[in-house]
Structures are given as structure tokens and as C-alpha cells.
Image (cartoon, rainbow, N blue to C red; front, side, top):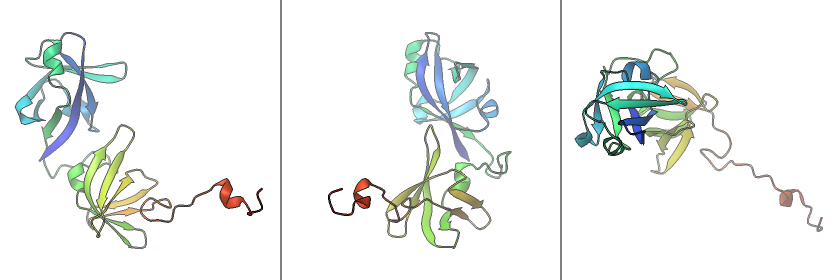
Length: 185
């Protein structure tokens, strides 16, 4: 099974290094020197990591055969993909691979159906579940512990406790106009 582990960002310096947006909880394992990664688009790879280092809080990688800035810049926005055992599980019990979460039913604590996970969007601040509702519309649910209260892989469901307005029209609006009595004050 293939797992997206990073996205290549901008070139760094003139010796072929690139910044990477890490998309794995195990970068020391997946993005180590010597690792051979498939790419999307496939025409950019496979790429073998030659060196890696952290600079100003960002991971910098250099790939075999990429020796200058123009070569590094040509890789920008390429996804790096590692081959993993589909039965393998992350080390931490509250961590999941995307393929484990895809197609889970999303329900409220009382069992009310919200929909099913069709996509997971990895944003810089948090991950989002893209959930397709039974009527075909979509809702985005932040994958944070306060909202996603349980992942039950055996039952193939994700239990959520959304704030008002996230998955329905229960949003509460507070404004001064609501407090006005209608007498102009």
C-alpha cells in the first residue's frame, strides 16, 4: 500500500536541497537518507534521499542526481510516496493512516448518521475529514479530539461531537440587533 509522506516545497540554496511539508508522524523512518520514494507525478521519480537536515524548523532534503537549484525547483509540489505494509499500524494508539480512515461511517454519539469519509485533507494547522452526506452534499469536519471523539476501526465508524452549525443548521448567532427591543436603542 502506498502512503503520501511529504510534499516537496521550494528549492533551498543552490546545491539541490528542497524544503518538504512532512505528512507522516514517522519522518525519521520514512524520510531517512537512502529511502527510495515513489512520486506523484510518477514522471518525477522514483527519488532516493541522499541527505536530510533540519534548518530553522524545516526539513530539508537532497535527492540523488539533483545537484542544483533548477533541478530542485523542478520537483516543487511533487508528492513523496512510501510503500508500506497495509497491515502495519502506527506506533501510537490514537494515530491512523489515511487508508484506515477512508470510507468510515461518521455518526453522532446517539448514532445519527452524518455520512462517510471520502477524503482527508492535510492542512498546515490540522487535518480535515471530507464527509459525503447521504444527500450527496459534503461537510468538512476537523480531525481534532474535541470533535472526533472516537475512531472504531472494527465497527468502521468515527463518532463526532460537533459544535452547533458544523454539520447542521443549529448555529447560534449573537449580535446587538438580536438584543435590541425594537425601540431604537
